[in-house]
Image (tube, rainbow over the protein chains, first blue to last red):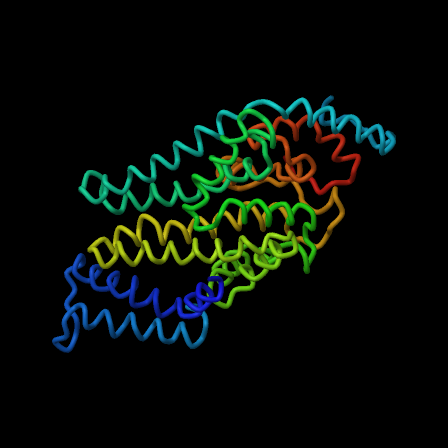
Length: 64
Length: 290
């Protein structure tokens, strides 16, 4: 069980990015009335931004 | 005894006797304030969610209140960690444990982990190898804030120090529970976010939690121990004058009394300190202008 939990913990930056950061960005943009650039949908834009940040955090093992 | 009393001529044994008499005078009572604090804070924060979701309270105000709620979580659990509400075997022991368990989850750490690591902190204060809170130490206030944020990153040392401390205490069973709490927190945030409540989850829990942890690490760990380079009982912590007052710094101006006599309830440490000050002076303690 502990091994499984540790395995999930190891992938937490990506889980956090796609599970939390992406909807935060999407819903934050909608609340502020912001349009995504290049004709992208809000959720698509959030997936690109949130996913990229999560991937960087996963590789660096830190967000900041 | 007045603050100007010079007790430096007294022996170690005499000072000890006087110190313990004062500590006993300020301990042993039922800390009802901390019970009200713990459950009032919990109820307030839980109530905040429907109030914000149904637009009774605006989200920005909910964020401010939730940040205060998160900052207030730790100290009731801290009294419970030290068995101040009730010791093992006492009639109200269940209440002591309930206060700890019912509130510590808000800041995503199991009560037993807080208890074990905090007792290790008391036992090994400022020990670079054995004090699980040693990562709070920093050269100045800005560095302390930055260090607190950095230590909550995936590569932070603090979580490993906590796991090592519980392992040394023979409580390896707490490690998966601790990980489960962290994953549970993220899971709840994710479910809320994909259910359309991402901003509520962000501003009522995630961000208030991180602001509160930075504040708590600063005032409860860094400031009372700074510079954190002495381990002797009367020198490993200090009294200090906080620019935001005793309430603003959560009573930590008198942290030295807590380390010397951890069974004194938080709300009694200022009075105990005022009486104990001449003894602490005679002990060459690090005392601020307070």
